[in-house]
Length: 150
Length: 150
DNA sequence: ATAGAACCTCAAGTTATATTGAGGTAAAGT
DNA sequence: ACTTTACCTCAATATAACTTGAGGTTCTAT
Image 1 (tube, each protein chain N blue to C red):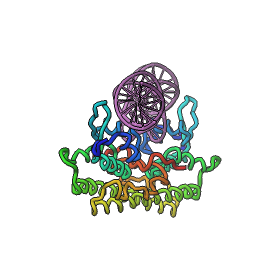
Image 2 (spheres, rainbow over the protein chains, first blue to last red):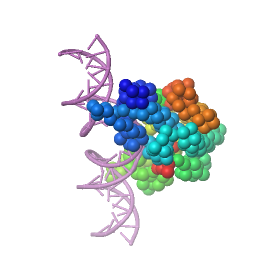
Image 3 (tube, each protein chain N blue to C red):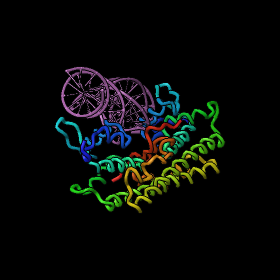
Image 4 (tube, each protein chain N blue to C red):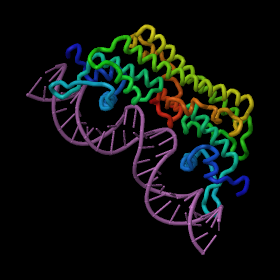
């Protein structure tokens, strides 16, 4: 196996995902591969980073669709540079800050509700719509779907 | 319509959800109703608060299953007191703090990655498994599914 | 009395993010 | 050469949290 021709099994192991997930990401246009003589997928080493970035973004709570949009802004013709990745990261950092702020807001509301016992429709800040971050916010956050919350 | 016999349409309007959602919650055991002569649902006024609490918990990122578990701990035979609700709220507050801490951790990682440009498998704290909160954590956070993240 | 709004049930559809399985081919190890 | 492991495609299934639709009934207002 040449250095620059990584197999799907190797990729999966290195990235901690299933082979089927890589198929799926490819189908969604998040990653690319070419085929060898026997129709098997081969990946460029750059794809390792790409997958890692996808996983990092998912932890932040970005959907695959939006991750795809972001990745589409990367150059096609060359290996992305440090600066290319930094741009993505800084956008997602803002996203993350927004989400943190939203949850902190919610926490403060909940805390004051614990204090006053006001969990009612009319008084509680939690479900009154000053709760702007919820409606102007930026979509679903999925932390880790594998982990249940017993 | 008697004061204590709220219709499903009224409930839906008051709570900002669809009628079908109330049917769904009932089927899942999250809320209860009785029927009138013509087989239509009637709700106790307490159910308004119950639905609000469900919605608040969802904003925190608690799944319906877990919300159900929490609600099951409320007394069946009387209207829950301030203290009953406070107990739920304080549990969810911990949950919320855990989630905030997780995202802050991620933000710190991302920030340092912006600084060093290290988004690579081996060095970046984002996808290295010191990232314990991700794997020991407490499940998905869904903020607001209605809002897309363009 | 009658129209229209509100309600009923039950089955199927929706979205996101994958996973699983069947049936078959290719590559690698001995 | 032969076996085992890895890979291929395509379709179906899984989960959460709902929504939609069809076909029919009940309430409410005039």
